[in-house]
Structure formats: C-alpha cells, structure tokens
Length: 212
Image (cartoon, rainbow, N blue to C red; front, top):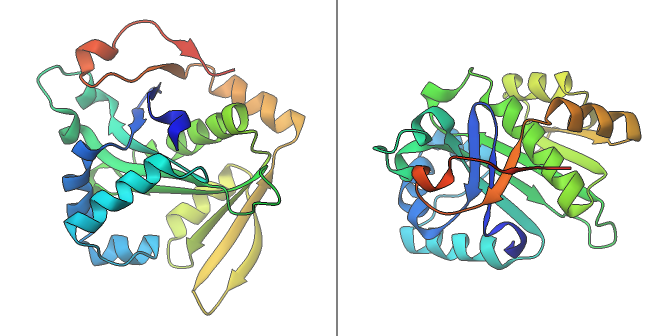
C-alpha cells in the first residue's frame, strides 16, 4: 500500500517499517520453514516470486504491510536493518463493499523473539494504525486451531470467536471497535511515534509524531 511506503512506527519493543526489496532475501529464508508455511497458510515461493510479491504489497490498495524490527537491535548503529527483522504484520481489506472491515495477520518469524511480548505490541500498533489511518472499525484474525498461543493473545485483546472452519483447521476471531475500545487502545498506545522512514537507525532516532 502506497499509504505507508514512507512510514515508520516506533513502539517500546518493536519498530515497524515498510516492506522493501532489501528485506526480501531474509523474508524468503523465513518462508522456507514448513512451520511458518503452515501457520500462515502459505506456499513456498522462488526468490523472484518473493520480489514480485513485495512489489505487489507496495502497490496494492487493499493490503498494508510492515516489517517488524527488534527495537533493541535497531537502535544499535552497527547493526544492519535486515539483521533486526523478526517478522511482519499485515492488514487485508477483505470486503470491497465494507472498507471498515479488515483481516489482521501477525507473524513473529524468529523463534528467539517469541514469548517477549512482540506480538501483542505489534497487534495493538497495527490496530491503532488501521483505525486512525485506514478507517478500520472491525478487525478479524484467522488463526490455525493448533496455534493456541496466538489464539490466547487475541482473546486477551478482547477478540471473540466468530467461527471455526474444520476443513482449513482455523478459527476466525473478531472485534468491533466502539468508542470505549478506541479510546482505551489509543490511550494505552499513546507512546507510539510515527515518523518518516529513512533507512538506517541513526537517521531514525529523535522526535516523532504520535498516532492520533
């Protein structure tokens, strides 16, 4: 999505940056994992196909994606951005007749980065971005029935079960954002800073604008 091609979002544990061509080789290595293929319901792609996919993410108007960076690593000027990558987060506008509805998908690809609260912060950051920048009022998440950690995380964020598909072995969780949920989420995540994306940690540090 062109909307976020120059946007960086900084949280307490993670930094979200646009998915660009420099990220593709590491992303491609991640997606060779049968575990991640199963968790994301993805088919393995060639490197060339992965570059094509990255370009489509940048151009398509119904998809918004960020690469997740470990903020601690990102803050070190001696570490390349690609070395800070831990996963990705996506918003899909799934219903052309209802632009207020979106599917949310979070992947923490690096096993060593799981269980650190990255997924929860990323989810809340992306929900704030979706509400304030895309006008999203209803979020859904489709999760494999075996992925109990993710299911538990979304339920703690007050998503409720909408349906279960035994054929695809997945559950759909959803949340409708009312004014109280919006106010609480934006209040809890008031520390998020939004700034122009310029590659390189030294260029990123400093002041920024909160999402409102």
